[in-house]
Structures are given as structure tokens and as C-alpha cells.
Amino acid sequence: MRTKLQWASAVALAATVFTALFSAQGSGAATSDIVPILAKPEPQVSFVSEPVVQALPSEDDGIVTDDDGDDQVIAADTLAQLVAEQGMPDAIGKQLRCLAGAIYFESRGESLEGQLAVGRVIINRAKSDRFPDNFCDVVFQRSQFSFVRGSRMPKIREQSKDWRRALAIATIAIDGSWKSPAKGALFFHAARVSPNWRLKRLAQVDNHIFYR
Image 1 (cartoon, rainbow, N blue to C red):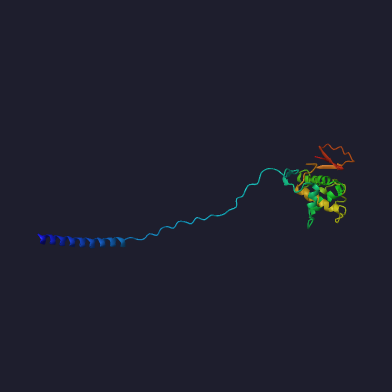
Image 2: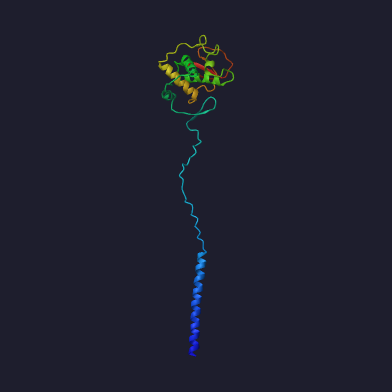
């Protein structure tokens, strides 16, 4: 009896050892068949700082409309201040000279508003289909301006304050940066005469009466 038990125990022990060895070989083979997979790296999150552009307000504060409806920014509280802020140009082009010359000879003894009104008449004419399309041709058009003699202007005292002021007014008139007191005018005459024009009277500024 003891012999059978011993034999059975020996057989059971041998079976246990065999099973353990077989299981260990199977585990190793399975491990050797595993192919490592690299984990896909997560993309790095980057933050880009960009300026936020805020729309400008649409209110028309500080805006004037010139004779042709173009909006312009007022750069001064008074016309005198705006004139004082104008610097002398490095070079005076032909068209600017013609416009400033007309202002100089027609209205240099008048107020700044009166000079501006004269300048705007010339600009309005150059923009109208009824007149030549540039300042010089408007100024030298036959029988239009009394200071013109033989298609020429008299000599200008270019070192005078009157000339510098006329240049400043001409620049302001071109830019449309100040309202004309005779908006839309195409004609004017001295207040001392009465030509009986059949035109719409707009305003009298100093010694000139303006019409359209």
C-alpha cells in the first residue's frame, strides 16, 4: 500500500514538473511574437498671439463734407489755425501756383473765409463740365478774371505773408479740409458791381457775391 502511494506521488510530482516546463516555453514564445508599437505622440498645442483689430466708430464727429460730397477730417478748430498749420511746400507746382495766384490777386485783402470761397470757385469750375478741367485753364479762360492780362498773371511778391497765406488757403481748398462759406459756387463778382446775372445767389462773403 505504501509502495503504491509512493509511486503515485512520484508520478504526480513528475507530471507537475513537466507541466511547469511546458507552460514556461509557451509563455516565452508568445512574448517573442509581440512587436512593440510606438505610441503616436500627441501634437503640441501652441498659442499664437494675434492683435485684435477693433473697427473704428462710424460716427461723423470731426467730419465735414466739401462741395462735392467728399468727407474730410477737420484738423483745427478755426480756419486761422488750419492756415497756420500749413507749411510752405518744397516745390510749387503749376496748378497750385495758378490757384494760389488767383486767390492772391482776387482776395488777398479779404478774410480767410473770403479767400477760401474764391479758391473753391476755381476748384468747382475745374470739376464742372461747363469749364476747363484744370486750375490754370480755368484761371486763364478768356474774360473770366480781371487780373489776367494777356494770358499772364502779374508778378507775385513771393516773400510776402499774403502769398504764403494764399498758398495755405489753396492747399486747404484742394484738400476740402474746411467748408466753403459759399458752398457749390461757380461764379462771383465784386459787390460794387451789379451784372444782373440770372443765377442762384448763394452768399456774400466780404467784397464778393457768389452764385451757382
